[in-house]
Amino acid sequence: MDVNPALVAMLGYASKADLLRADLARDIYVRGGDRSAVIAAILGRTETSFQTEVSWRRKDGLVLDVVLHGRRISRPRRGEPMFEVMAEDVSARRRAERETAAALKLQSDFVSFVSHQLRTPLTGIRWMLELAQQTPGLPEETAQCLADARQSADRLVGLIADMLNVARCESGKTRWVPEEVDLAELTASVVHELRPQVEQREHDLSFEPDSDLPRVQADAKLLRQVMLNLCSNAIKYTPVGGEIKITAARHGEEMWWSVRDNGMGVPPEARSRLFEKFFRADNAHTVETEGTGLGLYWVRRILAQGGGRVWWQPAPAKHGAPACPGSVFTFALPLQATLVQGVAE
Ligand code: ADP
Image 1 (cartoon, rainbow, N blue to C red):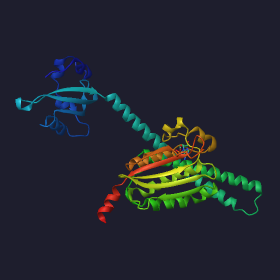
Image 2: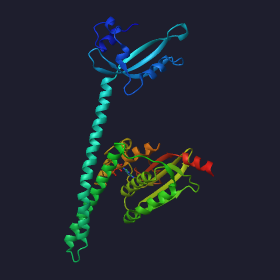
Image 3: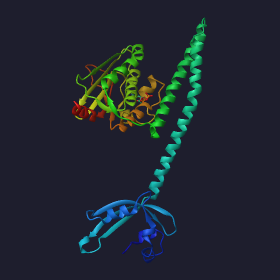
Image 4: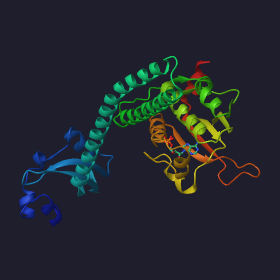
C-alpha cells in the first residue's frame, strides 16, 4: 500500500509509484526455500510479528539479501491482515560472511594438503634415522647427531599432527559420534600411555575417580585425545618432580573431569586467551620452546561439538606456595548416558 523513500532508493526505483507497480511475487523469493511457506507463516493467525530473510531483486536485476521485520497492525477479523514491515539490507554482511567461510575453507584445505604432503616423506626420514641409530659401533658424536635429528623429526610429526587435527576440525571433517563411555577406564588407558613421559620427568601422577562414576555419552576416540592433550600439557609445564592429579566426578547433570598440576601456572594476562588458536603464554615460551598453541584450541572446539566445555582455574594454593601455584584444567560433558543407563537397569 505504501513504501518510504529509503526502500525506493534501496531497490533502485525512480519513485514510490514505480516500486508499488513492481511485481513483488516475482522479485521477492526465499533462497533455497519455499516462499509460500514463509507467506503462510506471515499470514497465519497466531503470528503478530515475524522476522524472515528473503532475496529481493532490485529494479536493475541485482539481488539483495534482505531481512524483513514485520508487525501486524490490524486484526484479520476486520478484513485483510495488514503489516508494517521494515526491510533491512544485509547483503554486505552476508557477502562478508560467505567470503570469510570461503577463505577459511581455502586455508584449511591448504593446511590439510601441505600437512599430508609433508607427512609421508617425514615418516620415511624418521624410519631411516631409526635404522641408522641401530648401526653397531657408531662414534659417540654421530650417535648424538642421529638422536638429535630423530628428536627434531618427532617434533615435526607432532606439529603436523596438530595442524591436521585443527584443519579437519575446522572443515567439519572431525565428527563427534557419541557412544557410552566409561571415563575411569578411558582415563586409566591415557595414564598408562603417558607413563614413560611421567617417569622421565619424575612426576607423581595419580587418578582418583569418584567410586560410583556414571558413564557419559561421548566420542571415546576424541575424548581420549582431549585427555592426552590436557595431561601432556600438565606433564610439560610442570617442573621435574611435580604432582599431577586427575579427578572425575558427577556435578548435577554433568560429568566433570579435571587435571591439576603444581607447575608454572598461567600468568593473569594470558588467562582469557588460553583457548585461542596459536596462543602460548610467555612463561611457557621460555621453558618449553617447542609448541604450537593449537592443542587447547582443538580441545575447546571438539568438546563444544559434544555439548561440553573446558576451562582453566589456578590450582588451589597450598601453604607457602609461590604466586603461580599451578593449573587445573576441567572439562564438563552432559550426562544423558547415565539417565539412559539408569532406565535400562
Ligand atoms: P602448546 O602446549 O603446544 O603451546 P596448547 O594449546 O596445548 O599448546 O597450550 C596453549 C598454552 O596454554 C601453552 O603454550 C601454555 O602457555 C598454556 N598451558 C597449557 N597447559 C598448561 C599447564 N598445564 N600449565 C601452564 N600453562 C599451560
